[in-house]
Length: 83
Image (cartoon, rainbow, N blue to C red; front, side, top):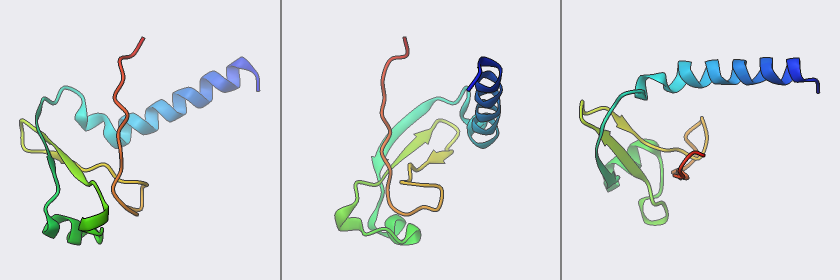
């Protein structure tokens, strides 16, 4: 793959991420909590076998990590410092 194609692909991926998740930019995390049994049921996730959690922002927006875009189970977020 040549550099121009790689750069163009990266720009397209970045644009998609900003479209999907750009509303998170500038938000402040207020809380991180586990999902309740009822919340897990709403996602059709097994409460006893998932470590489902919510990230709650100061404007009460909530982000719930999922295993995939279809919501097939709770997800995990790797948090690392960017170099």
